[in-house]
Length: 167
Ligand SMILES: [Zn+2]
Image: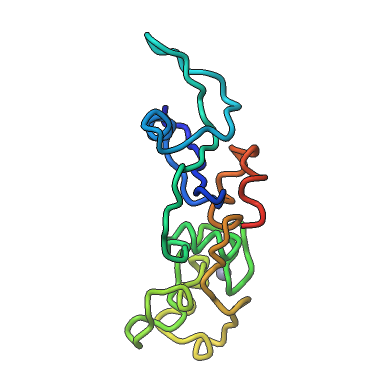
């Protein structure tokens, strides 16, 4: 019942991932309808219910423009799990403040990058130029399109692809 279900807005825009339990509640309350089953059925005492994979809300939810949440995991994903200073991928990553915090560096998408421990240590509390290092990319907020936001679910839920692409 905890398996993820993709929730589409009334206009078919993918907006959320919820649990199977929550999705069934929305369907039974008449707030959503089943778009894709694909996972068999759930048998209760009185009824047989489809096990949803994709549902769609009956009425359109209005919401602000989506943003990718600023977390370690999302920083590493944006940076393709690659140290932004030396380009290595086969090392444990840390998060580096490009402009160090003690120099007023902010905790945001444009000042945080993935860095391996040796590079992070070598840079220390200095700016990139002061440490004679180079960034592979100028860090930016990642795009908030559906393919990026929901992309990490696609390896386990390939059937969502047609509902996500293009948004
Ligand atoms: Zn490195």
